[in-house]
Length: 188
View 1 (cartoon, rainbow, N blue to C red):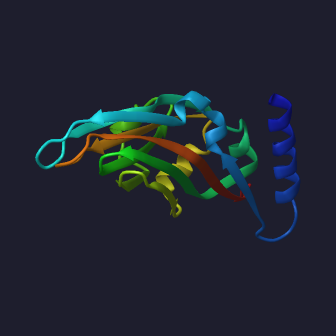
View 2: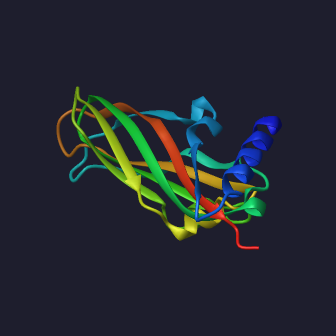
């Protein structure tokens, strides 16, 4: 893994050394940094209650530290970072909704103490599969995290069960979670 990071940095340095205002675009597969057991959650039964019972935020990924490319900040200036997320929801019984939230912070701050970077609402219907895709445009707060060596990440799920009918049971899984980092040559 260390060799791979050095190769990426060397390529970044070569790409940025040319003339003009060239950009280096890195696609970071954030999902690959997470343990597969943290990428999905089975829920239920969420009982029937008037107005639907809310579970509150439950961690799917609970404050995981992610090691980023060491030294990117020394060869390039991160100009922007956009986030792409895809989730799959399968509702086996009942109906309701789920809200997925992604929190990101520097290594000294608890992620859930910051505003969510992504918030995704899923309507759940019995027997139906739903795929959600969202792209969050460049955010300067997130871009600042990618110049550091480490960042912390949390992903939560918050269910609201049915007001009538069968209890809510199902599964939510992250399918893709990527960051597109655009960096440019540093002015020396």
